[in-house]
Length: 469
Image 1 (cartoon, one colour):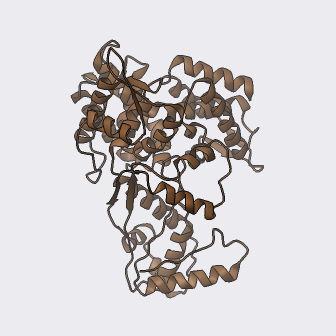
Image 2: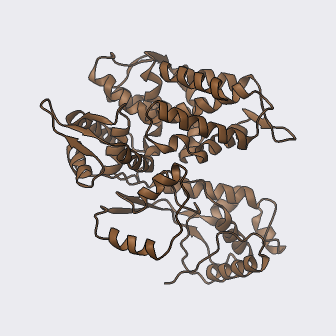
Image 3: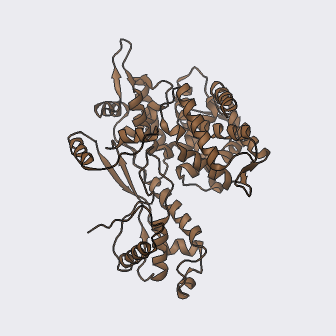
């Protein structure tokens, strides 16, 4: 075994780039197993980052030079119950600069070794055969090799496809641990507090949902039940339990809530589709199937891009029906032909449905904020970078006013992904001066989102957007 190190950037140093490229080719052509991280950095929010394609591009160039030894990409998911850097991540998300590493960092790490950081789960996704991917995306790729063309024009397209596939396959092998599930349940409450027995019941419902509607057959679910997981999370210092004459209350302070959002985000994708569907009924009594399919068709591409969800758009109608069927089987929705309705608002079933829906609601609130802001600014009056900055600033303000304790709500990376997807979907375009231009189709999507969101928060977003921009 061994390791090699690389600079953060090769820009402006052609010699270093050439030497590193050649070294990497030597490693691959001699058949050595190599591990690298396609994200290219640490995720401060717990979400999978958009892949950096540099190492994958170098892998492709090497393979075009010599493909005598086949290459298989083995996606690896690493699930933590607690990470060393959670405090520094919180600061960085709130705008603090990353601290430089030095001897002090080493001593701090040694002190941390005395603390309990729980368990780590390592799981493996489905292997990606490089030959098969190249054959599917570029059937004549071997001709380029015979012509000694190791940087063909189609390289960016194939590398991007590979990067997305690797990230998606990593997520497909997620391992949900007790901290992930407690975080998901508690953060879906309005005030970061819930009756202990009700929270335990909610966590049991999460487990039942994952068993009834598994994201993939690779996803792991923890042993035990909601009550066990709450006790474990308290022991790990992730939550606190307040004694009360009418029953214990599980709660999280602001510091704990920010940490919990990291662990919730590790597994957000496995709840995304059922949560998206449940969210449609939180503020609406009923929908027919056609309405549900239309709303999902609008929203799914953005969820897919942000969370690396596994289904293609053409699979969506079937996936929606399967998820709706599971929610009906769990008693969370009622069906009459193509008409779906929620349980009575004062029922336990509605409480459960709302809990599922809240997991995805904040994401849709973020989308609505950006679309509302863009409509206020007007077509041709903002660049993508300016929209990203303004969206983040407004989201930060709303998070303070509404007590949203998750810094990801105003994370610029998420707004950047949203804007890129709006461009990809053709809902907005860039003119010659890189100004964003759009037509009434953007209004249509905004109005669809209005149907889903809570009226008071929706009104607050509109007021702040139109006042501050």
